[in-house]
Length: 225
Picture (spheres, rainbow, N blue to C red):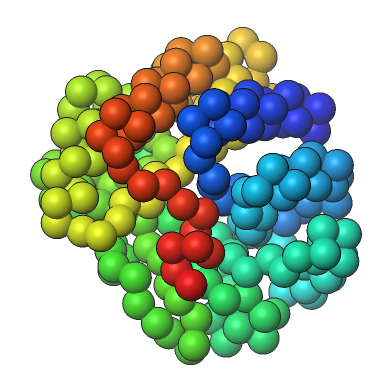
């Protein structure tokens, strides 16, 4: 699976390079040590490396962070979490500067609003960055919404949101770049729509739209600090 992820990351890097965008890559803690060569390339290309914690302990996160910072000679400032959340005090003690909290992108997103705050705020001396939500449709700007929403509608969501907010956080996931018949991930049926090359084309269309509308793009740490 590691080789497959590296191959898909190359596609993402190429798209970002073509549009001269810099982004933040949230890497799952348990595979960080296996992706050091790739992470070095991502970092050298000017992108930010941050962590995504699925179920790692505080001790594992601490050790992984120290090892990667020594390898990259750069600090890891951000942590993303969803199901398995550790406390803000523990995150602060690990010397992170910001937390990106995301919610589960289930099929029922059409009938619910996000349950967390949707604006950047400070807790325990940490900058908390929640998912963005469109005031236009009330949909979150999560990976799955981008995957299935008609592009014209999604573009309208983005423009309307930027009229009301200073920023929109858009994120995608590695599994979305795999065709359904090659994916190493166990996905529910509704997440197998518009994956692989179709998803790459959608992302390229979004990047072109961002360019055409002169929308600024930045790494998380640049926007926050």
